[in-house]
Image (tube, rainbow, N blue to C red):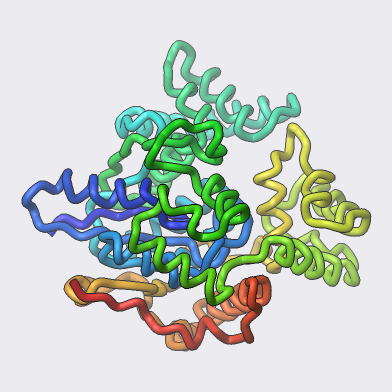
Length: 403
């Protein structure tokens, strides 16, 4: 059997995601295949809450053709593109199943993305990057300029101008650095660009996740109908009816409350992962001087420090993720599966279970990660339209479907 892997947010699961799954089955032809997804939980890579709960999105994926859905633990789900890719590749590799990693990109050129990933390896690139960063540019701009300086006349630096190409390059880098036998396959991104508003895209079938969130805010789950699979839409309408979707205004207040509470300590953000160049002082001052999360992010954002990075920094600080956070996920948390595929995983490189409580008993690192996951889940539960009690992550059952 050929097994494809996808690393994703599914925030929410939409027609573009289903197209990816269908395309992988088309590529397999008549050969038997399975699709395994590593999916963000209640928080997503932009450093924000997911629109609907992890299990609703996992069920949408399984009902739309995915065979297994594993959770990408939260520290990696809200990490930079590099950390997100490293965590996702580790989760998929640890299943012992995969031979192909598939991902969307603007260019759709696997070979070019691999060449770009290799150009980012080694001391020469790090030296060039540091030289560019001293000019005050953003990390993304500095990285692109460093690649151009090392590979003059090459077209690979131009790839880094697009967000999904950037993430695709990080997937290729993770495959190289973790030395895994996994073939990368770049699927050309369909429809709207990453983060593109609906009014900016003329595509009839595909919309960005940001556009879908905006649609929901304006017209509720029903407004997503043209852009999500019918089976997913049913789940989102139920989540809306039950109040199990994120109230982003409440979310902002809760996140800021956690940051303010941290400010009772001396040097509250000094240990937060990713802090450098005095960012811990900049963050503390912004927390003390602003009264909303958007205002906090406005105060933190500069050319050197893009808003997405500052959003992730604020979330890391609120959730207490420090430089001591493990480098890679310690377990495999199974969210959903098709009955016909569930027996697939055999000997896995990491502990595997649908039960977070069972994973927590595996070892100390697993226990610490499960506790962090539970705290974050409880925060997410508080920020829903109808707030829920604590401990829901331990009571949720696996999404288990049959054909």
